[in-house]
Length: 366
Image (cartoon, helix red, strand yellow):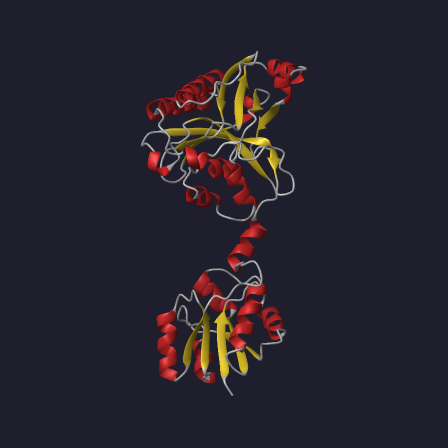
């Protein structure tokens, strides 16, 4: 009889494990599944299991292709199964194609006369998922804010960062969820960062993988009115209560989407961007809408020089700029008085139909 042996954490069982067990069992006549016990999981992974050992034992034993389930308590990282493996002396140790401890396992098999078999990745019958992905999904929030940026945008892209530069932005409400997304998409509000967060992915890593900056997920996770230091990774410089912005912001849909990754390396005035970021930072410190509006105006000058279409003037607004990478998407408008914003929102005009109020969002204050 050919005895096959597999090992793993198997902390949250999913259909990928089912397929692996089936393919391993097909190598012989008997399959033993070993999982690291609670103590060893804590020692090697620095976390407790999601399932108690007796529950895990019962679930693994219920798989029809599994003949035996054992626990591993070996102290060597990657070889927690070694004591029971030495005791059982199976014919085959089957591993996945991405096995991280191949050298140790091959040496053990050679010592005991077993075969080390790396199972190639066959076409998955199910959408691939990992235990860490399941756990991340469970921890993901059900809602997320989006964001508006006032100044300093592009200084969060690592290759365009500047020592001493600042990025100033604010999380906004209404929030979004996977079931309800009350904004246009690809619109300059950090939607891709929010989407990654809601799906349990690392949103900063997701944005950097796209070749863009980190400001969207940084402020979305932090919320509130934030000033960030320019650099390769998000570093919060200061944060203020954004309530003084309430009633003063609106978004205008320009009628077309924009593509931030495509715009990363356009020629633009980074000196003026840095100046706008410093001005916006001062506005945050002073809690001055007028100073932030000045910074927004400087940012808009950069955008016009980048050949973005001029935005319409709106009566009562004191500053405007495209959100995010511009060249489409939403544009942010600031109003000196709340009644000015309400009056234009209530107007019977085509412009008013494309204008929507937004408010600052701070999860720690709400």
